[in-house]
Length: 217
Ligand code: E4P
Picture 1: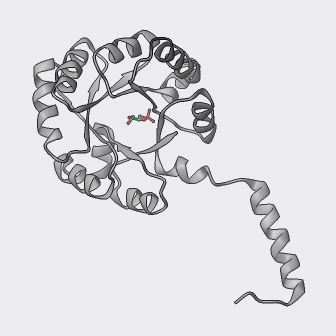
Picture 2: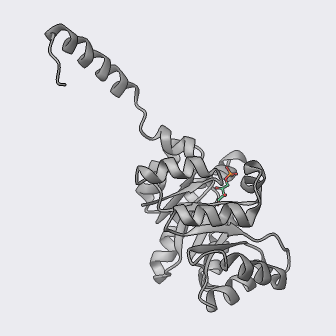
């Protein structure tokens, strides 16, 4: 499974990239706001750090506006993925932009039928929002599983990008189901390394090591 980091925080992207944890980046208008930076500037900087796909989201509501914004965003760097919302206009924009050869990430997907439409419109990625479904007591992972089944049934090439990942369990569950990509905030990616038995085991080993009186260096 590919790991995308869901942030516009350049320092966090640098840190995780150095560890080999970043196959791509996703941003959205809220994350750009949080960064306090200009969208064109910060996205360009991210594209210079990360070789994989970097999603930059359009904000127009009509297809024409999304296409114009998408073309402008795509000029930032060759690894830009234009992100459009899963609306009828978003699907129109997806078709035009993907026919032009741009990578397109269709975002805000909350149903299997929406994912089916995105695949038919030529989306490179579909972003089902797991956490936001969980927020309203709907199992977000069931949606990932349904989309996996549908895409496999018909050999759709659109990649499933599990989004709105909020917990470490979301990551392993999405991987078990076979999501192609997951995007999570840096803190969730860091938490994947944590286990209380690792900490406990390390503490015990170090206590015993002290008793040997030895040094490695
Ligand atoms: C995905 O592309 C979105 O940027 C993101 O995953 C949304 O996550 P949230 O629901 O935690 O805001």
